[in-house]
Length: 230
Image (cartoon, one colour):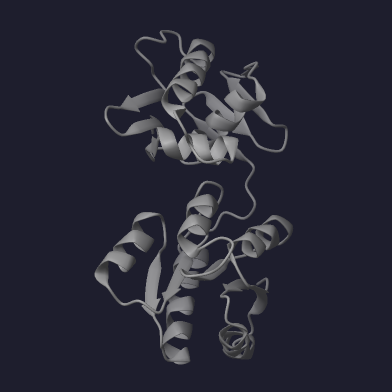
């Protein structure tokens, strides 16, 4: 079996180094980042199987990093925080973290949680390797070719339309708010994004739906956002 890689992200070097020692003793490969920006850069260049992610960090905090990671990947995320309030835990879990541990923590407890998450991810079928294709009832996404097909025919999308469709198809069934779609696709803070996103959603529907006014794939969840129906 391949060596599993854990990305440890914390702005405290002593914590990063301490966690690394325990993980390496268990046979894991370890990557380290000081903030969310570094973590995202490492994720682009390496296959990572689990992320340990501090909430409070400079440049990009753990909540923002988790939000961006979840738009692309389903790898397990264990959040760390010096705060123990329920609101921090709920916030972390709501944006996609799988587990949460408060500082100070015992390294063996963190290690046990790492093993548990990796066991679920690898052995129980969540881990699918670097799959590049998704298909939902005739609507398919090929991330390597950067193509969307409908019943085998290539759908001609603009780059922005492709990015929105890719985001929704890679997260089938998940509802994204207009703000989330804008910030993840345009990679900037959302200001007056509603009309911009709505126009692109309408254009995508015109290209993938037989009846855009009664969509089969790209559904609106009123008051929340959009999703690709399972």
